Image (tube, one colour):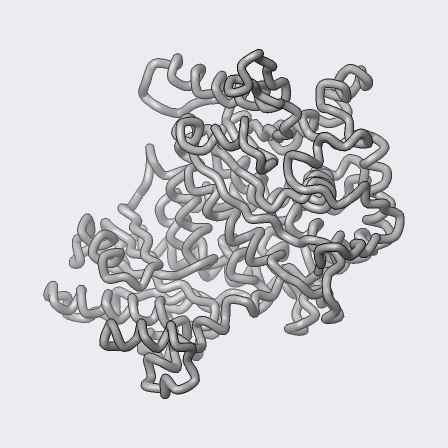
Amino acid sequence: MLVPGEAPQVKPGWQIVGLALCAAAMQQPSIKRLDELFAAEPGRLSNLTFTLAGIYFDWSKTHLDQELIGKFVGRAEAMGFARARNALFAGDVVNASEGRAATHVAERGSGSPGEVELATARRQRMRALVDAIEAGAFGDVTGILHIGIGGSVLGPHLLVDALGRRASSFNVRFLSNIDGAAFDDAVKRLDPATTLVVVASKTFTTLETLSNMEAARSWLREAGVEDPDGRLIAVTAQPEAAVEQGIDETRILPFGEGVGGRYSLWSAVGLSAALALGWHAFEALLEGAADMDRHFRSAELASNVPLLAAFADRFYVEQAGCQSRGVFAYDERLRLLPFYLQQLEMESNGKSVTNDGKPVGEPTAPITWGGTGTDAQHAVFQLLHQGTVLTPVEFVAVREGDDLQDPEHHRLLLLNAFAQGAALMQGKQSDDPQRSYPGNRPSVTILLDRLDARSLGALIAFYEHRTFANAVMLGINPFDQFGVELGKQIARQLSEGASEAGLDPSTAALMERTGL
């Protein structure tokens, strides 16, 4: 962990330019301005742009150059990147703190043969349930209430919101927050007589999820549904726990213990998305992710797209002191992407110790945040252009629109995305300092040809592998998440009547003030 005044630990093969903060770091003489990099490198655009799985990736407006990439490749080699990548795809233990493999890639056809076979069998069971629901085995079904929290809801919600706007077989509503207002909002457009409830939880012990499941049971019962339990489907890595909660084993879809929650949309956790979008779309999603898997697994380090993204991440966090990264979706269909990435990146790499429990020598994950399209321009881009806090920006856009409006709408949307990147880089000097733009502010553009299941699968897999690559570069474990447990443990203890004696005075006063 970095301590002010102390020199940072230097990774093998990598020399840190210096610990400067935020925008001031870009003024270091050793760091060239972006416009200077373009002038000095005639082939810069071709060297830093890549087309893969129907997606165009552009890192030319970052401070990466061939010299930096070479140093980062050396660091990746010294950190055993190829060995770690091979272990991931072989189904070896990569989650050392929990003694597990990370088997989400097996859901897409990679991994140990046994895990791939098991994932295929579970997917066939999932397909059979989808077919049964579509064939009327559960009666007339018009709506799905998907209950989960974290990775058990963020992925499926992103899929349905992105791909199901124009064609969804069911009215799918998502519920995660334990707040009763969230429940009211989730069910108000559903008919309890024709709604199935999908409860997704890896452990099937999560307080928020189980509380919302009980509320759903009551909602069904109070509406006159004769067999509320018969309307519940469980998705879990612990089927026995779901049985204990009263769900019949014939309506339980299991997934692997090695599939982390934030990596689980490829498994039966994607049931609601498969129902809404159709099985063909779910298969295309997996195929797109498999495209990215093949690239990540086999590409040379200097041209490996997720690894290059991690190189840029490491540069801005470690050298420029950037503590956040902004992701802006210039397509309303991807409005949930920043929220999805918040969990993927910060829960995975928000760590302070290495795999062997020693303090990390440099900053780990930045804060991931963002917004949607031109809305964000009128809310936060003032700071991005003229503020003193340097924030690398990522623009995610789609070349082809899919709406009923005049094509000029989509044209203007794309023009705004491209113009913002140009303005961040170029800046503009003025005699009036209030109207000066310093420029030299980095951005990445990720442009999908079209937004369909296959390209979205590839995009999400890209972000997963980027997260993994960052973790390898840091020597940390991206597959555990013990940091989320302590607050939950205290909340459970208090809900079960544990003594308040050990609480700090502030928390004890809040408990007293609210009568809890």
